[in-house]
Image: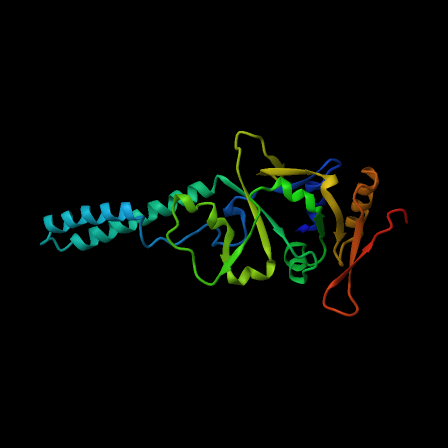
Length: 251
């Protein structure tokens, strides 16, 4: 199976150089879905829940005639849930996610992630998957994820809402090594995973790619001895899809 990355045009010279193609290790807060690794907590793990009820039963008895007792107990419950959620969020912030598409001819992905067909698509060779041990398909659901604890902090990264199902996404997760310097792109420090350009099977320029992007891609291909072929997407005359035609870089 090939893996694909749809990329906007302004990033061509930032994510590809003469040696590597750079994949961003995105923290959940940097992704475009506010529900990423953001579970709902309305219950606690059994051990904590049992201790919680035991403690608050004592409080109820001690302050049985206090009109504020119930609100104090409810506030304590909410704090417990908030603490659990903050712990998950803190752990998830130390993770970097690399997302791939499994569909290399998606009209919506070209539109969403390649700047309305003005960007480009990188198709990775099948053997590149060996670099991503934790690669898994994303699971989609209409229901929010609830009450996940320490042992599930990784699993939650592979769960998204049903509305995203058309993306056919797969992902892998890495622990961010914050002691290693990040690459600065547009003033933002990014954690990047390099893949040698020999791991790219082809680059496809979008159907609305600018002359500048085409020239940049052609020059890059020449500078790298045509290791990676460059294609151009054109609308199919028979189906709602794109044909990918090899670009003659010598013309």
